[in-house]
Image (cartoon, helix red, strand yellow):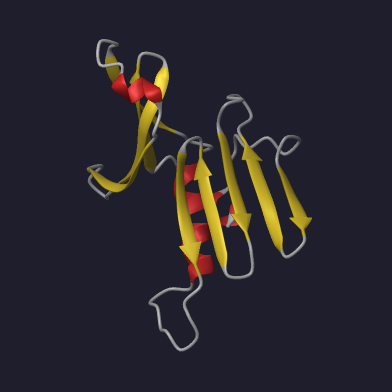
Length: 142
């Protein structure tokens, strides 16, 4: 996947793959933005991959179940989309505290479509007098 995407701004010194037990942990660091890290934790039958607060879970199908695409291909595609800047991460804050995060895939016309949203159970959600804002960011390692 890395050979196909060719992320020119990937920092090879800070990026790594660590094999532990029955899985692998992967960290892909940006060469210029320390806070931009794409990560994945892959086991034998499940995985989680993401960047910052945004993430996706992947699961192998149950025995006998048929899926359209292999779950391992879905992981690689998601990581490639993150590296190419095709996924927009929107973080909603109440004051300085994050209270929700969502990530959006952009179609061929550049229109965003919601993929996943996570809300955090935090006391900051109740502080309605604090200003609420949403920041959007698209990572690109190209």
